[in-house]
Amino acid sequence: MYLRTLTIAASASVLFACNSSKKQSNTEDSTASPQVTGTTQETTAPPADTKTFDITAIPVSDKPLGAFPYFSLPDGYQNFSNNKVSDFDVAFFWVKDHFERPEGKIFYNRVTAKEGKSYSDLELAKNLEEVITGVGGVKVSEAKVPWDSSAVIPENNKLKYIQGYGFLGNAVTTTFLIRRADRNIWVQLTPTDDGASAGWMILETKPFKATASLIKADEIKKELDTKRT
Image (cartoon, rainbow, N blue to C red):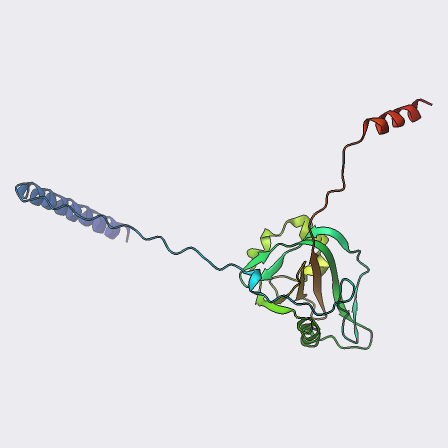
């Protein structure tokens, strides 16, 4: 087999050499021929992916809302943990083929069935969809997040809000948006891998307001005087 391979390779080399000599000869013989200027064929770059999410296409809702986080769970379901609301942070919401990264106040939790109740992804999802769309919310995405896409979420953010994210990439993630005149409200629901719970998170956008400041000179002096006494 090895000898046969060498023979084929040698034959190919000879054939290539002969063809090259023949091409060179033809080129030399045609030097008297008029030169033809070829048109350079430009390689057209593929069109850029223009799939972007136009938030202005979502109608503004002015329907009454209660207090944040606005929505309660259907009968028989409960929030598993007593997580504190984050006053200001970023969360990642899947919209068809990418993550939107709104910043603001965040509620997150893991949803389970109460004792004696059978958990149902479908029942939970349909209940939330009805109440969210009832106040002008729009389902902007319902798709499974590709495994490689979830890697863009920083590890510390993923760990902090793991109960809210659910099991991204394992099941279909449903994302809603309620667009208000002064803010946006994002809601995301993703089942976990145990078949008995789901992660959900609600983010209300708000502008960042810095509260840190420089220490005034008189405050520094007062602190130093206090330490000396």
